[in-house]
Length: 332
Image (tube, rainbow, N blue to C red; front, side, top):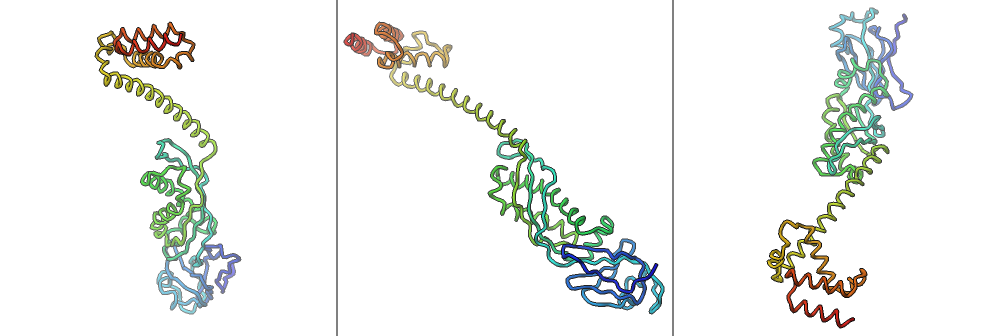
């Protein structure tokens, strides 16, 4: 196999984050060319050794002090030595896309109901520490291109996003249906949460944006159905409470008029409960409001009978009964 004298990487696109030189057989005297915004690292056995910034270098034992002590390279010799050369792109990448491939399950804090959500956005990075970057990734992504590196870190983002999102919603008491109005705040919170982990890999998070959070159509439909049933149950409960309130107010009015005791003595009793109270209220309303009673189809005799029943039960005084009796008879 021919030994190459020039070791360099001219990227066709600035999108490439890391690139491994295809040959591991090198020799003293080879030229290493590192372009602007690049760094080159020599790696052997998974360990990172010498680092080179932009410039042109002739490889000797003088500029490979760490590696030369390991492989015992003879100065000026032609003896090949084995090492990997990794080129690192140090430019800032601002428009990298990320998104959840599958929905993230969370518990909706406002309604306490499980829902699945998906999230999408952009992020930007810069490789700050090439040694840490290669040391962390060289064993996992040997020979990887930028797409695989980005895929790896997007997986890290999504893995942490479920916890970040749930904590943000619960702590702030925010419904998942309101979260899109707080994406700026959530993006800042998420960037602060993921930055330390990325720093462990020698990566600086330059920007991180969550552009939208969505709920799959099937989950949204199921939630709407359950929410509609919940509202229906609440409305029924409110109606029953309203009926009980009317009955209670009727007894309050009777008590203030001094007739509650007579009503109990007349046989109402506590055992008749709310239903009896509603019936009494209905009879009083019909007796005291002849127009409404007539609208229900009751004749004058029926109204007289109801007024008499109220008087007999002690719910109205004799004066009130006589006045109502006169009012009904005058209209005959």
